[in-house]
Length: 251
Image (tube, rainbow, N blue to C red; front, side):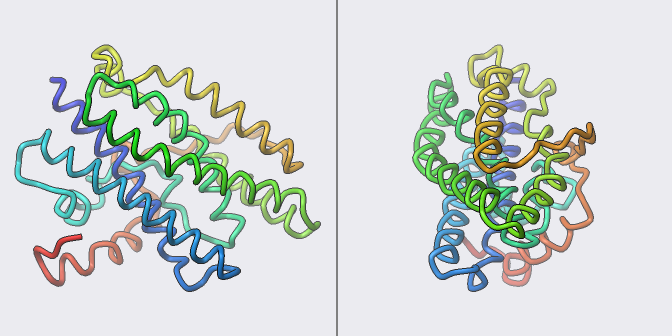
């Protein structure tokens, strides 16, 4: 059914934003400089705001009286369907920026196409989120270039970040019967065009940053099916603590 497919897709988008927002929130008070501490915290808030809108809408489609609080904070680990990329540890600043860039380079063209979705509510969420996501991509891409084309140490560190995180990027383009159903309905765009734009963006930025795209063919996935890395349970315990300790709290 269309509603079941839409519910599952909204969870995927919402979980990606929620988990990455939680990861960036871990930087609050620990940024390398004050401006970046504030910037990453604001991007975290943007992503969590997007997650709230997407998960609230998912709850409406599901029709089981679950809102963003219940869907975002009261599911079990295997019920989250975010890509593995967004749950990877922050590491150093280069790791965080590289993870963010790979994600932003995908989210921007996705939202640009979702604004034309036949589902008016999803289109409205995408339109509002696009304004934020364009800034996110500008921020992360400029930092990748600055670090890659900076000192010998910054170049080496961010190249190591790319080597580590590249294997998770392909899952951003994961498709199954959910996307197929919604594409036929005109709710979702064809992901092949988005992937071409993503590849063009990352190649340009990495060229400017003097970084080399890894040549290995490792591709890690499983997040879309609820199979997560060893890091996810620890993240979830912090994310859900307040809601489980004090039930019925609201964002």
